[in-house]
Image (tube, rainbow, N blue to C red; front, side, top):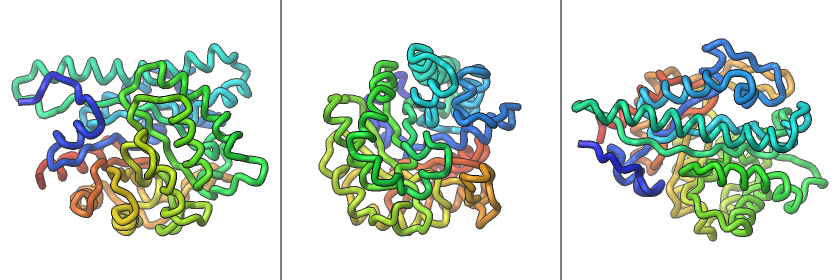
Length: 328
């Protein structure tokens, strides 16, 4: 029998998930495009917060039905400078950030209220993680896959860039904060310092990406990148997102040696994003059935949260969820 009580923390969710491994959702823009959304805007999928909020809620519900325990909001590329550049006011931008959390919470609550009335309910109440993309994601030129921001981007500039968005998203009341596709040490350090300065009480995770399967995109070692994170009690999990799935085994093993925090992995399909051409390039791809086999392997190696990123779908998450449940 499933508890009606929402998990009180990320650790609580992990401990009560089948096999001790929670499942996060998958690619958001990929699924929005399937429903007719178009992303020619620098805001990328965040443009749907303005144009198609009903599609955002629809995608959240699809991932819940697929077995996701964590919903990540549609705010990855939603930044106040980005909204201002599009002609919106600060107030309108802040409203859209809050809307991203509201849509996910509404989807979670409506799904749970329906599911818990079913005697054969197999679902657990999900948590909502507010997505905070890297500075490189805001630049919309693929910088999150290079990590070389240049000498003008200082620690203080990165904190100033993230500060108000973080404040607004915290005010919106998510269960978690998800810092995604962090490409270098300086941004990881900025985020840790910002969480301390703002005295954020919401649990968070910080995910890097990797283009070589060994280091951060900047070329810095993950040992160096994790230095500040390991000293922080504000960060509950660390890991990798939007990197090829065939990198995951090595990176999980590496992170196990470098941190005592929970490890989270949500790779993309294996296709490679060309930030300048703004399109996906074919590469060594995983199919949905591959994710099922590898998810149990990643879990056994030490991953505590598993999901998908770009170009994965609810079908991918269904396979992962079923595989982890069957093997638990």
